[in-house]
Image (cartoon, rainbow, N blue to C red; front, top):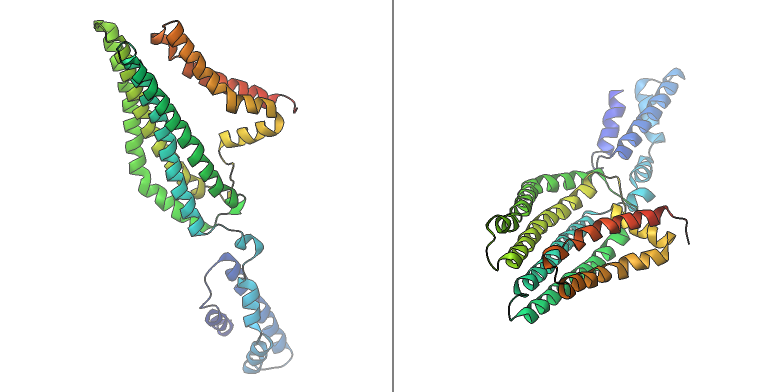
Length: 317
């Protein structure tokens, strides 16, 4: 009845709306209405019945506390502060990964450009510096990001946080689109120096066209990765009810492989790429095949995935 509804509405006026509090109010109204009908059937008039019901439910404040107290799941939900920290860490990770790849590309391109000159030693030095900077960024920022993610593992994501993430995602859509379009455009434009060299056959431009290809391609990859990683950070909160530290497919594959085949994990993630780089130097310096030696990297990337997938299907060691 209206009197009981108004009474409960006044009691719940200062309580934040949640599905739990709304259910608690509905349950209390049903109980009070049932008791009110029982009292009327027992011969009490409306005022007496209302007074008795309200007196009997005088401990409604205790019921409110129980109904609105955070459950274990609620206490384990992520907070906005934690999510903001995760997003800041994601931006640093995006810059580190994209910047690390660009650093390596700049170093390799410098080495290729300077090989036919008297400053070939400088090219090798710049390449080493670029690789060292790139790998250092991958390791240091990557580990820092893991330290941010791990405490959030298997924590709940509230609808309010999802709404905030969707808003951030929407606000970043234009920036993400610009980064993606610019990155793809640069990757396509990177093909022009080698194509022009093939058509015009400019003297002493072979290696420089290869270097320009790597520089421009590295810039395009930088834009794509930077924008994509940040956008994925918002998506990760906006589209999930629970946060998983190993939500990325690569992270899950890495962890699974480490458990299933430690030796293969050690080979792939510590020895594989150094061996590929060594092979690149041998093919380039010893055999002088600079025009094709760069192909070892895309081939090695595909082979890496094939070996890892095969290792994941193999029995545990």
